[in-house]
Image (cartoon, rainbow, N blue to C red; front, top):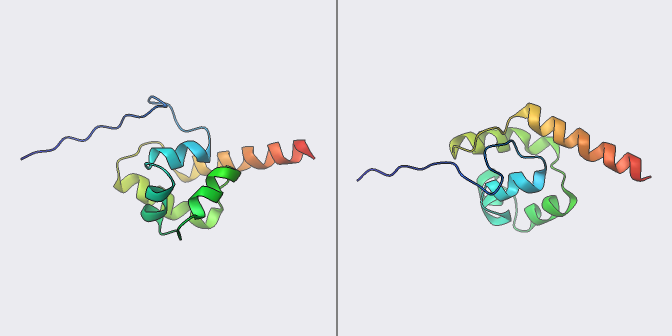
Length: 92
């Protein structure tokens, strides 16, 4: 039996524009936690803050590649992280 898996999500084929979208691409907080080895509940905090600390980037990129989730690389994560902190600075 052969199984063909295709990548399709609510965001179409564009790159994710937030850490929220990245978590959703993994199948939600629980699946993201399992994929990158986070403790239970941690991904909900990440999703709420829309921020993923750089210490988790390697695991996120590797897990995305293992699951066939395209477009998630260090360059994207750095851009999202910078965007998040620019918004925080502007709000001050």
